[in-house]
Length: 291
Ligand SMILES: Cc1ncc(C[n+]2csc(CCOP(=O)(O)OP(=O)(O)O)c2C)c(N)n1
Ligand SMILES: [Mg+2]
Image 1 (tube, rainbow, N blue to C red):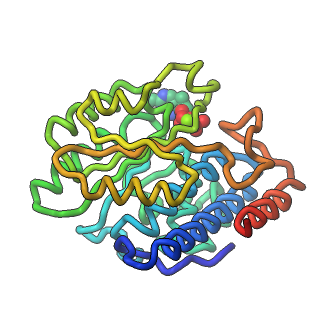
Image 2 (image 1 turned 180 degrees about the vertical axis):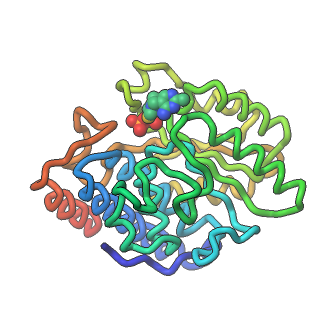
Image 3 (image 1 turned 90 degrees about the horizontal axis):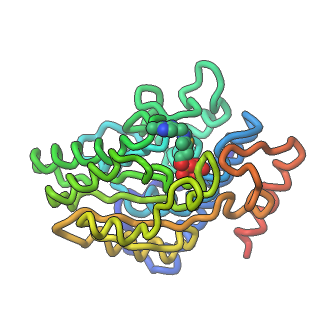
């Protein structure tokens, strides 16, 4: 397993190019961690983890305030993963952040592991809510953000949703409520990978135009290439300054990003990877970092 970087707990003030390179390196390690975990099971939600790695690298190494050694620090920013099946991506990021030890990744999805295949708050340090049943993240984020505001706590609440989660009515009820209360301490992040369990999002249930919908619900909305670290940094820097309404960063990502072998696989939602392919995947990932 690769070693974690020193966690950044505040937005950096270093030179922009250095900052972006540092995040790119973190995204590489997050992808490496995800491949290592994927190999433990031989299959899983590997494409999503690779696709969302750049987003998680920006959030965990550049934006979020937290103490890796004290996951319950009351003033921490909360990161809520409502898409429980993306647990592999979150564990990869938490290992990079130093919240969970790298050795734990070798137990991913095994009996008695702290890292179950669907994220559960009671099992894993740094996991704020249990996922699985889609559409619960934003309602919880809204309640948490109201509570924090009531307490005068300046912490922010982030919620990572998938495009499939936009099919859930509860997401939009919460979106309305969050905007109604002017909760500018909430940042939603939507991973638009254009895919769901039953096929392309456009065919399952049309969610576009996604940006217009969030704006109509009273949100400050920014749409960005979710595999472009520089563009992500700009978007997250911009929304952190926004006041008066909640913000959403809509991220267009590529399933399997960073590993050409795993991009555009036919069965991409739950990917099976042959034994001999893991090393090819790692080599391709390294080649991508060198470019
Ligand atoms: C309320 C609810 N309905 C259905 C499911 C079954 N389910 C699990 S993952 C998934 C796909 C959701 O879309 P998305 O997260 O965009 O898929 P991905 O990008 O990971 O392929 C579905 C429907 C669920 N977990 N919860
Ligand atoms: Mg999707």
